[in-house]
Image (cartoon, rainbow, N blue to C red; front, side):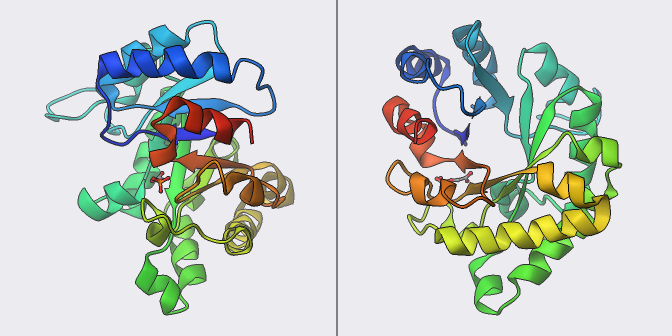
Length: 244
Ligand code: PGA
C-alpha cells in the first residue's frame, strides 16, 4: 500500500502526519506500507518512520548519479537520504514533464542501480479507453519501457496500473475493469519474462482509491495493492486503506 503525496505538505506537516499515522498502522503486517512525499520532506519522513515498518520513497529521479542537471535529484542521493522506494513514470510526469517510455526505462535502471525499489506507473488516458485502445496503450508502455529490463532487474520492480481518467477525479475503475487491465499487463510480463515472474510481480491499482472502495478493489486476486494519491494525505484515511 503506497501513498503518493504529489506536491503536498512541508517538512513540519510531514512529521505531524506520521505522528498520527504510525499508531494507526502499528499492527498492520499483511502488507508493505510506503509513503512518497515531495523530495524535500524525505529526511523528515525517514526520521519519523525510523524503527517502524513504514517505508519512504521519492516521486521521481534522474538517471545520472550527479552532474550539471539543475533541479534534478539522483538515485544515490535518494538512497543516502534514507528512502528505499521511488515512483517512476507517473502519468503527471508523462503529461506535464515530458516523460516517455524510454525515459521511464532509464530511470528504472538508475533506481535499481542505486538500490531503490521502483514503483513504475502505466495507464491509459480517457480518450484512449473510449477509443478501445487500452490494451494497445498498456502494451506499448510495457514494450517500450519495462521490457528493456533484464529478468533480474524486472524481478525487483512493482508496477502500478493507473488509468489517467481515474486519477484525482473521484472516478475509480470498477474492480473488474482494473482487474482486466492488470491481466493485460500480466500477460505482457508472461510473454517477456515467463509465467513465474508474471505470477509474482506485484501490480498496484491507482486512481481515486478511498477507504470506501479499497475493499472491492483488493477483493480482486489480480490487484496486489494500491497507489493512493489524495486519500494518502490524511492519516486516518490512509490508515483505513492500509487496514482495509
Ligand atoms: P488519486 O491519485 O488517488 O488522488 O486519484 C492516484 C495517483 O496519482 O497516484
